[in-house]
Length: 520
Image (cartoon, rainbow, N blue to C red; front, side, top):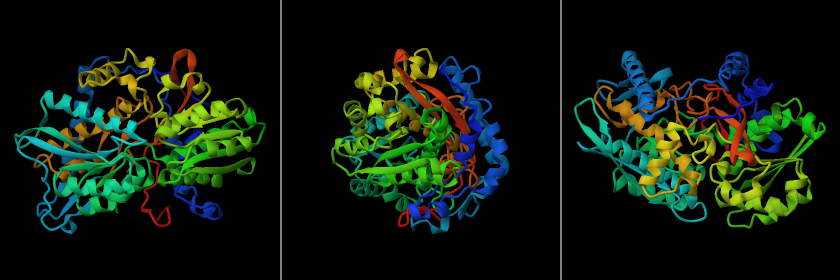
């Protein structure tokens, strides 16, 4: 995909800030709980070197045949690495091992646990919950893209197994309305009644309610959420990450403000962040406080939050924010409130008075620009390095054409929701992992699927050039550790990346304590 990228002179500074250990903290303890790991600081040189390819002119594949060849070669390399290293399930069946000390004691799995539950000789039953109704129903389109992608692979040879079997995916979905209380019994149903092979959920609050249980059940859990609780391969080895964590994203936001303090804000900035009253909001707030605690310019930045309670009109806190005349406003929200916030900001005068208006990735991935008109002009957004499926910039890109056609074949208009693009981002890597796992010793199994995920290093077609997609056992638990800062550009009707940075392998592991809202 063709992308306009301008590397900023302070990209090294952004990389440094992304290396911060950004676990939750309150105001009084932010300095002690959000410190910078010194070893990571020493590795800054290599982390910055990883950004040198940003903006490269290396050609992307021009056909799906070329893409499939790239992925086939990468899958073969992963399979070879795993086999050559002797990783996998032990001969006595009591342990699975993987890269960088990754290990699971399978004797702790429930009595009657099966490594192949959810598999038949011809099918793979995959379960997923998500918001197919309610105020965040647009995010449910993620599941429609996933289903379309599975259908494509089902029709084109399915998922071959080293034991000679060839399977297709039976994708079983349930509607939780983005309500964590509904997610819990639906996950129980998928595990106990449907007996799915692997399971997924959408949303940070939802994931935090069930990932203990799913790990105790020893079921692979590729969660669609952006929080640090997915970065725990030791305490929660069955849960894998998806995109850039919200906490790290907030650090990037802070670094952007710091970069522009003198040039745009006269040396001082008042930053107000609108956050939801849930774990998503906690993660954004913790990340920004982590940034401030290590910033040499923290004395020049006045940071506060306004919290939006569930179901409350967004106009009320925005009226309060407008009265405080912020220099920078950050909408760290999700779902329908994102578009409502953009509209309200245009109506209450903040669009003219606030120097920087910023969306978080959860908003960027759900806001439909065509519905916003000129209200979106001038906004910037952190996007987790993801491309835009509906962007006209990508009209001639082979992967984009392919993905749009898959949706059309399934009866969906790719322009109807930005979440379709998110669905291809989250959905792309699971078929790849199934194809890898099927070629490991013993063929497809839950432990082989997990090993494939923990060893993955591939080129993701939904990521900007320069943003890596990889995981590495107990050393690197995050698929994505890069992001863009993009600006809505009216004359191109597109988000155009101004800045992209990647610090793959630099995010510290995190055992998330749900009581204290901190890493331990």
